[in-house]
Length: 289
Image (spheres, rainbow, N blue to C red):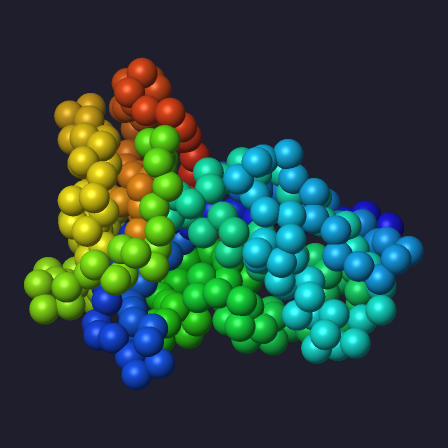
């Protein structure tokens, strides 16, 4: 038996860090939405009781460092599953890009293996398990648009934002999220207005959404990697409605509504950057079959 599962990327429309917690994590407020750029996972039952990861991307580990592997291992141990699985990952989301590619792969593995192994878990139960793997995994289990609080694992569903194009550009560098957080000076943060962004999404006010985008990690990454700032400048120069770095970077995205402007920005960036994508915001949350 084989099962195909999509693992969409996410962008942060807003990312705020409130303080460092006693457990070493940071307390965050993030508004995230999934986009139509996705990895694809093929799950196949194995006769042997083992987890086998396959990927042709040299940056994707095929052992316990892989978050999809960790998801499968967690389910096997928690629910005493004796069947093995082969997880083939077709990577479309850039690696170490601030787009939650690894977390989304883990979430897709949780959803797919829940069906393949007949575990009968709800999305809420899968999201709780996902929090044990990584801070973004809970959101990726649900997909859609949401406010994430705590260390990112407390998810509050939000409506779908107005339809628009999302153009993403990733320079040929990787960024360590842990390193960015270590360098973040909590006392020098210019906090985005999370409540105003939530109101803008609820009222489907595209202009207000564009005005409220913000990411407190941006300055740290921009100081480490000036090429990220150059991409932002290029997007603005080409006429983007809003420009922001996603997560800890280095991917920068911009929002535009008009097809003609999307094509102008996309074509302009392709001569300037290694990886460029033009996609749409996805609509609804994932559903279990």
